[in-house]
Length: 65
Image (tube, rainbow, N blue to C red):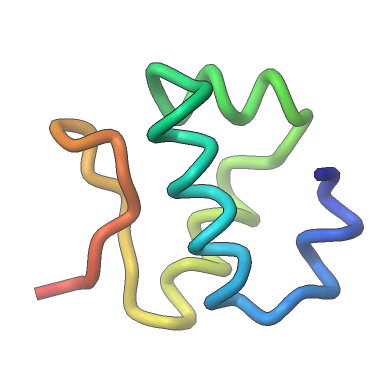
């Protein structure tokens, strides 16, 4: 997984992959961003496009309420 790959994918697929990585491999968003060399602003903007935000307590991207 890299930023170029994620940029080409459907944002809902990106959401699924990112949440799986957060659940199984990374203890926080910061760890995920560092491990996969991703830009926080770009990822957050991409998730915001489909109505999701990062929830630090659950360590997952969740729907905006």
